[in-house]
Length: 178
Length: 178
DNA sequence: TGGCGTAGTCAACAGATGTTGGCCTACAAT
DNA sequence: ATTGTAGGCCAACATCTGTTGACTACGCCA
Image 1 (cartoon, rainbow over the protein chains, first blue to last red):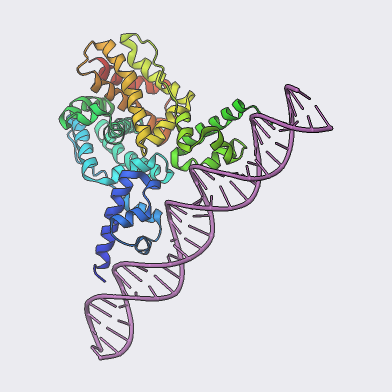
Image 2 (cartoon, rainbow over the protein chains, first blue to last red):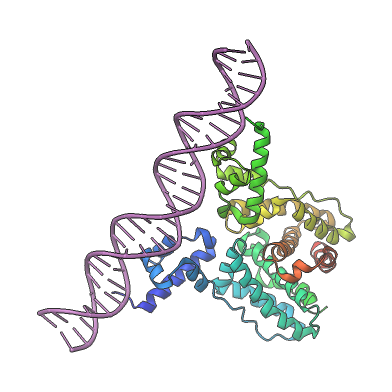
C-alpha cells in the first residue's frame, strides 16, 4: 500500500504513453509497460481493464489549434504542429498505431478533419473545397512528422524548426487559402 | 508434388506481399499468409527460412523514377508516385512496416534519399540543399500516401488522380527547384 | 489491539506465434 | 516394378501474449 490509487494509475499511463509512442500498439506489451512502471502486469489490468482501454487512455489527444491571423496561418500551423508533436506523446502514439489499426486511424480522421476544417472555413469562407484543403494540410503536416520523427530522414532531422517553417509554411498557406 | 518449387515460392511471396501490405509486419502472421496461399505454414519456412527473410523478399521495391522534363518534374513525380503505389504493393508494405520497424525505415531512407536526391541535383545543380529538398519532396509524397491510402481521409480518397496532381505538383515543383 | 479495505504480488490459464523435425506421397528415371 | 527425390503435410515445441483469480501485506480506524 505504498502509493495512492491515482498516483499508480498516472505512473502506468505515463509508461504506456511512452511505450505506445515508441513501439506502436502491438509491440508495446502490457508486461513491458508494467516493467517500466515497476509494477506487476496485473495492476495494469486492474486499473485499465483491458489493453485496448489503456491504449484509448494513452491516445487521448487534442490538437488545440490556436487562433491564427489569416496571413500567418501557414507558419503558425507548422510551428504549432512541431511543438505539439514534441510536447505531447499522444500524436506520436496515434501515428505509430494508426498505420495498422483502424480505430486509431479513425481517431486521426476525426482529429484532423474536425479541427483543421473549421480553420479552413474560417479563412476561406468556402465550405465546398474546405474538406480537401484541410486534408491536404493534414497530409503535408503528417508527412513532415513521418519523415522527421518516425522514418528519421537525416536532412529532416537536422533541419531547425525555423528552417522547416520557412520551407513548409508557404505550401500550407497555399493549401489553406489559395 | 503438384506445383514446381518456383511456382509455390511465387504463390507464397504474392500472398505475403498482400498480407504485409494490408496488415503490417506483426499482424501479418505466417499462418495467415500460408492460409492465403493454401499451403502449410511449414512450407513458408522451407522456402524463405524465416519470417524476416520472407519480409525482406516481400519488401523488395524500386521507385523506378523516369526521366522528367525540368518544368514538369513536379507533376510527373506525383503521377508516377500515385501509379506506383497502386501498381506495386512493395511501397505499401514498406510504409505500413517502416513506422514500427527500424529495418524497414532504413530501407525507406535509402530508397527515397538515394533515388530522389539525384533527381534534385540534376534539376538544380545545387548539391548543398539537395538532401533537404529531396526529403521535403519525400515528406509530401509520403504524406499523400499516408492520408489517402493508409489513414483514408475521405476527401483524399474521393479526389481524382488529376485533382491531386493539380494540387500537389506546384508544391513539389517548388521543393524541387525554387 | 484487532480487523478491514485496498495496493500489490504470484502463478497460472488459454490462445497465438515462429519454428522444427519427421513422415507421407506423387512423380520420374532406372 | 523399384526406388530415389522433392514437394507437401502434420504434430509438436518453446515462447510470448492478454488476462484472471487467489493470495499477501500494509496502514488506517475503531
